[in-house]
Length: 118
Length: 117
Image 1: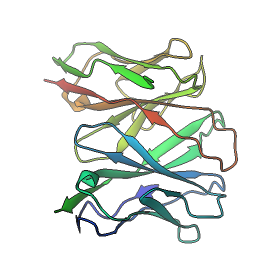
Image 2 (image 1 turned 90 degrees about the horizontal axis):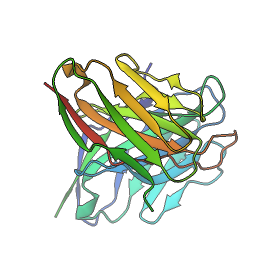
Image 3 (image 1 turned 90 degrees about the vertical axis):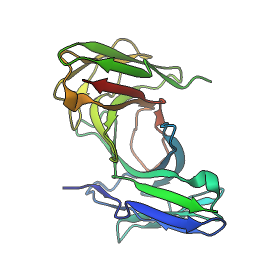
């Protein structure tokens, strides 16, 4: 079963407007973490923001915020004041403890391609 | 601040050839990972090493082998390359997760583009 689902394969947003990228997840582990990564056309994976399952407040990092709704198992990324440089693929990922309890496992969604229009 | 370094960045192989992707991290992390990313898709875990001396299969391990040479280095080997292994390969590293909700960033290399013809 899909553990991380990103239902928006592609999105457009007007420059300077806000945009929300959706992510839902599935886990039975009470302790987990959710990441968002940006992948520009150059290919590297750039860490944006992290939310732990026990964190009481939604994570924020500059123009990025994470709308964490634990009961709905969703962790949407909100980008405020979009810039042309925000055009990229965005991946949601979930960290769980490995089955042998020895380390991290990171599972990725299929990604959303964001295109910012001038 | 090198972080995670992968080599080579680009490689073209013929079907049946072998090659090794090298990865090194300078952050003293315990856990290291190899992922592959196919066009238009997210990353899928091939193998991981939770700590020096241990390796485990991920989601798509067939056709690959790994070696955790020491704490810094984690290599991925294709013994007999197939066109289905054409992909972008990412190495990553992180500290060992000990439980709880604390943040624990996973750092990625810049990727290695592999084409098998």
